Length: 139
Figure 1 (cartoon, rainbow, N blue to C red):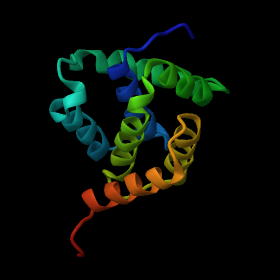
Figure 2 (cartoon, rainbow, N blue to C red):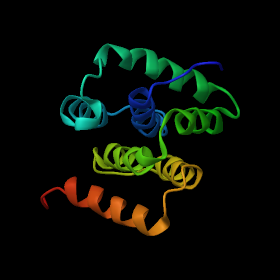
Figure 3 (cartoon, rainbow, N blue to C red):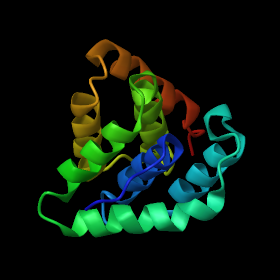
C-alpha cells in the first residue's frame, strides 16, 4: 500500500487499529477516539473529516495477511520518534475505554510497543495510567 499518513493521521490510525483489533469498534472506543481528537493538543488544527479515510486504510490493511505489520510500519514512518509514546498512550486509552481489553487488543499493543521502541517500563506506566483513567465504580 502506498498510502502516506500525516503524524496526526498516524495517531488516529493507531487508535482505530486498536479499537478494530477484536473485530468490532465499540461505541465507547469510538467516542473515546472522537474526544481525544477534539481535546488533545497534538490534534490541534486536525480536520476530523480525515478520520473515515484513515479508517479505510486501517481496514484495508487488516484484510491483508501481513497487514498489521504493514500498518505499524506505516504509522512508525509517519511519526517523529517523540510521538511514539504518545501513540502508545492513545492506543492504551482506546483499548481501556470500554472496560475490557481483549486478547487481540493486547497483542496489537504489544506489537506497537515493540515496533515503536516504547521502553517496557514506560509502557507499564502508560498502561497503568490508562487503567486508572478508565476505572469504573464497583456495581
